[in-house]
Image 1 (cartoon, rainbow, N blue to C red):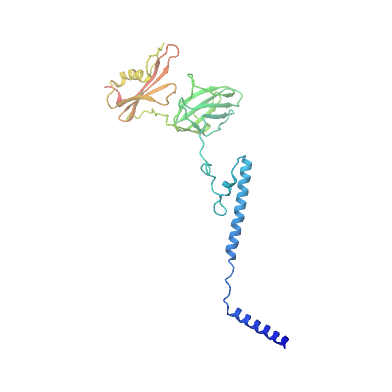
Image 2: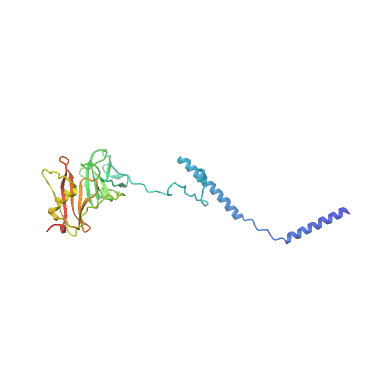
Amino acid sequence: MSGGNGTRLDLELGRRLREGLERAPAPEPLPLDRVARRARTLRLRRHAVAAAVALAVVAGVAVPLGTLLRLGPAGRVTGVPGAGPQGPTATAPPSVLEVVCDGSSTTVVNARVKLLPDGVHLRVDNRSGGPLSVSVRAGGRGLFGVRVPAGVSEPEPSQGGGWPVPPGVASVGCFPRGQDQGDTSAYAAFEVVDPEGLWVPWDLQCRGTAVTAAIDQAEPQGVPGDPVEVAREALAPYVGKLGPADTLERAGLPEQVPVVVRLSRDGRTVATVELWPDEEGGGWVVSTVSVCEEAQAG
């Protein structure tokens, strides 16, 4: 009896369990997509940390591990605090224009050069084996030319310093003796940048024509004083007495040689004076005076 009763009880218990399971609601499916995304996120973060650590080791930079662990969303690493802006940063242009010449072509090593208070400085690597003429142009006209020997040299004006080249696009060419320096295709372009705003333009802004007088003295003697005041005296025979609408000031660069003084009238440059220092007696020697026709005294 006891065995039969036990069997019946087991069967009854099994029946009730099956009925209870049938009445119970179906379980929610497991969020396998969220589990997979979470796993991918953790893997990407581990890979990003490993890559950042490797870069820091290669660069020889000690970066705290806590900083490297502060990662953004999956697949993106945020910038390290204090490391500056992300991406390429602008670098200051060099202060010397590097030029390579081989006798048949001209190559500019750095396409940009910084304008200094005394002008643009050149370093010429002449690989032709003989002397060459170096010419610089800007604004459709030649600015200066200088002869350089074979080898590396840094040509300067007779008074030293740099060359007065205005900001913007210019070009340089190297020419052997007898080659036409007016061939613009033989020049290599470069850019002069003026981050400090040193340049004061002196190009005449005439409504009509201009007159340029070359002051040719057999024995030039320097006039002492400020070059602006010396220029005022030199301009007097051409423009007469200056009025309240006139401004006389140094142009070009603050330390350039020769010194250029410009006369502005109603905001336009109507006259310029070029002055050179007198090496022997001191003072300033006026070399040229340029005046717009409408600014000339009657």
